[in-house]
Amino acid sequence: MQKGPFGYPVVDVGVTLVDGTFHAVDSSDMAFRTATRLGIGEGLAKAEPVLLEPIEHVTASVPNIFIAAAQRLLTGRRGQILGYAERPGRPGWDDVEALVPAAELHDFIIELRSDTMGLGHIRRRFDHLAEARRMTP
Image (cartoon, rainbow, N blue to C red):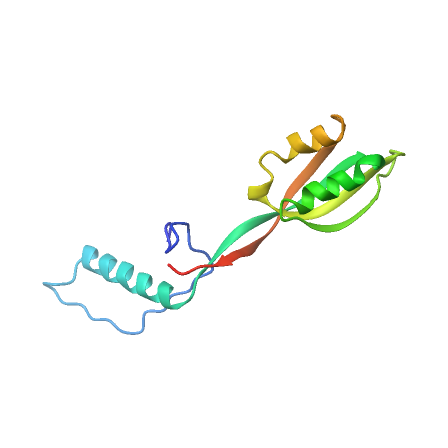
């Protein structure tokens, strides 16, 4: 299931074969593969599939005078702010934590550095997959 109805891999699917027969002349490996492909394609369309996107947990570290700029940048990229606090061991610095779609982070560091006089930096890690939007194949 490397290519589903939206052109991306399909995950979290179970399939149960409930009936089938074998015929010496008509049954072949290619016939069963074709029947499987047609059946799964029809079933997926009826199952109302959704597109998932990776969400990353981002921690932006900035001097506290730039905290508003960091929050603005994160929310402007569909980020959900989780909170902010003083960075341990770095007086005058704050950490802003947020959940942000990975697709929105490709040039985030450039804007963060631009808005923080080159001082801001980020740490990021995969957090989960979330529904991007409901689509029809």
